[in-house]
Length: 476
Image (tube, rainbow, N blue to C red; front, side):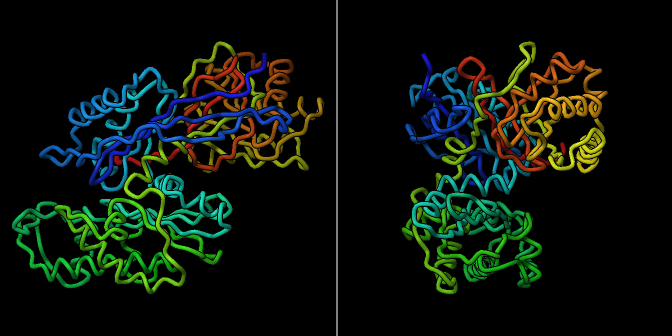
């Protein structure tokens, strides 16, 4: 009997500059009867548990307290009545200033191992912007109302921006503006001072250091300047010298007119509700942003989710699902984690042995990688049609282009945008010496420079859950 529906239990864990929390989601995958491959699509995402929100614990040396975090999330699993072994997908993300901590990568990896069978560890400002846009509801709103929505998720260390249209995220960006960049104690002494806050101070002629008592007027000046810079980059590319200094990524693509603006994140709770007081400049920053909102050229709308936007995005939107006609060697061991995606610009109209080999070599060179030194996923958008002679040519070209990887017995991962994975896999097995360690997947939309985790297949090896992510951690 053909299975038409699958349910997956997913977790999203967010360790941010100011707060840490999790959500559990139930993802419903339904077989598309109109698809040639009867592939599964994610039809429903339902949040089944929203956890407690705690201040992110830090040690005296300003690194993240892994023991405190691990114990907190273990208690959250117990409180929700969920066994980690039931979790089938999800993501642990380290956001904002937390991603800059020297032990951030270890924290993400440790939490992902505790969180379930297949939970990715991830960070990266553009990826955070995408998840926040989806988790806040901005991307869904762009589809439901036919609007182009610019979402801005303001956290403790960064503000993550995204432009959504027709249910798709068109571009993302990030600037170092956040409520936790300047932390204060009860006597208004500076107990936390991040580098972006120092840059703002110097720009406006202030000079304070850790432990200094700071007048309320000067706190207001710092928050005002941060708000001005944020509104600047929400209305167009960074132009001022300060905005350019604070940009973490490139600018948004403003080629599409913005119909609506939306704020999410912890600071947004105060922007919309005018409630909340934290031991940082978050509440003051929110008031300054509210004052400047009339400068925006389009209306500001309220999101479905504010402080939980990123964690909901991690739990409900970080998963992609391959087509139902993949090819996998039985000896290959999954999951495979942290695999870089190399786009190979093969064109069907120019298909030849030399063309495939040269484009594959260029893909490695573009990423400063040497073929055979590490596992990669080669991504093809338009390589081949279902025609045996052409498939045979492509198969032999792949074999010739990857001599070192094949000789070392490394996993060979081929991913296609179109529905050709099973045919390519079968022809490679039949016509080349590449007899083991082959994984061929299709109907996935990836970008050059993505990183992916590939989970164990579902439904008798028909469906492969794939988490697309970015990895940006400091070197230890």
